[in-house]
Image (tube, rainbow, N blue to C red; front, side):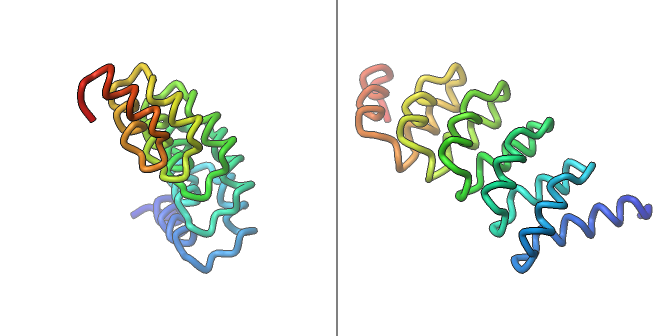
Length: 139
């Protein structure tokens, strides 16, 4: 393993540590390695400000990780629900804390997979479920 790969591996594991201080996660969120930033975005200790920053990352994989995170703020999830990449929108649609209005919008997504996940999210408003059932005859 090269020194660079080893360093990236170590930084990923530091981000995974539940005891990692928020200041260190903030610093790691600016790492040049996308995988390190992904691990920061998935950390249960990641501060919401850092999640907001990472939601604007150039790597769709990092934005997808922010969409998965249960502590991502509602406005961040709303913005990510308009992401070009369906994998990011799919992560938001499956997030149990996704705001109902965002789920309503995602239930009409151009990707059938995103729409289906939004409809089946436990937080989806009953009107979204009824709309889906009328349109497709199924849940």
